[in-house]
Image (cartoon, rainbow, N blue to C red; front, side, top):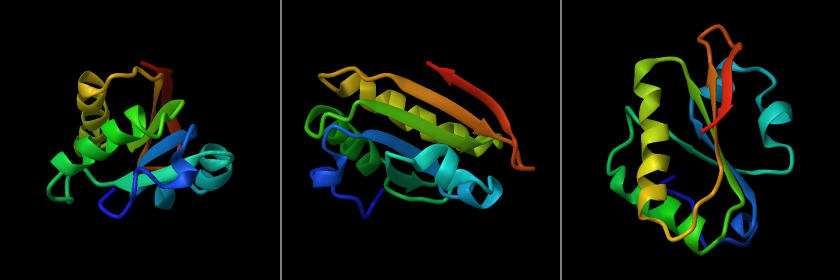
Length: 117
């Protein structure tokens, strides 16, 4: 998330996947299952610093880039819940509301849950 530019053309009117950075290593078919036709941003809610910037960037993606949807792909470990909290914080401060899907992946690489919230 620190390196993305929310104003970049590829984010305009896109379906955003916000993934915990470890998910792609745990779920072997990550690219085919989750990324086809979507844009990607990654973050680690446990190890990254200055996460307030993430909320600001998410607000910009929602309000200015007008993303259509946000899919949060996270691991089942407790620290990954923070990535969904960042999205919820951004939604509370944004002028637009977008549908959010939460997908949880097990440490053994299986989809545990997939739900619109």
